[in-house]
Length: 264
Picture 1 (cartoon, rainbow, N blue to C red):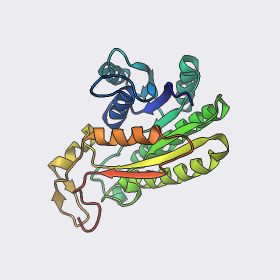
Picture 2: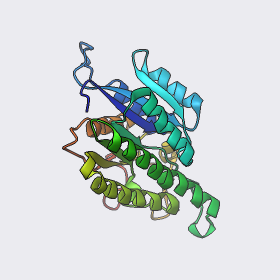
Picture 3: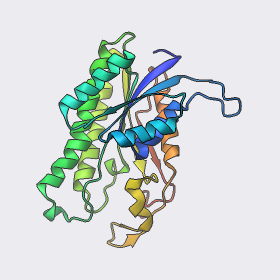
Picture 4: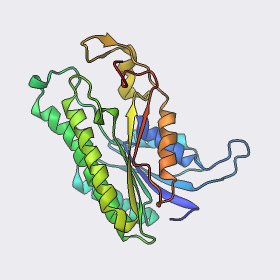
């Protein structure tokens, strides 16, 4: 892996965690006092459905950042193929995939009333989309010279403990854990490391409702604390910048006082 510059692909980069991670990577390796670079420089490929939000993320990275916006629907195999073709054409390799694109799906719908279309949308985005991107990244990392790279899947604390009325989201996040473990094993011969970050209550547009009140397991509504998305991004960067001989297999980063451990 080139210590001077590494190439990252971030899906769901137009907002939330994806945007925070993209910003963290483009700004990484700089001494906050002198401004000099003390670590690897990341070029970041921003992938997401809406070109306008990708451009907004790119603008936030600053003039010196090396970014490429590639509008991508991760549920579309041809779009994912085109994404990694653009990565190869522009940079020649991929050192990191942050497999982040996802959706909560509809909230507040009892399991027995959940439409098939809602189930399918969440599965297509959270699981099939993650598979397609991981497979494309795996192929690139296997074929490039020097060989290898890292895939970090965005899981969730729902991969451990569900919320009420969250069957599609919870099921896909459990499945993502299986994908992470399989990729970790299958990637060993090719220096491809795979880990997963399970996130709880990062402050993004998707979690605004938690600060107003969210349904608890006992049937009550309660406000929940959140954490800064930048804390998640710094954890992802730590995982990403490890040598390929080391891997954070699973990391859980959550708001300290959220109702996850114990009885809440």
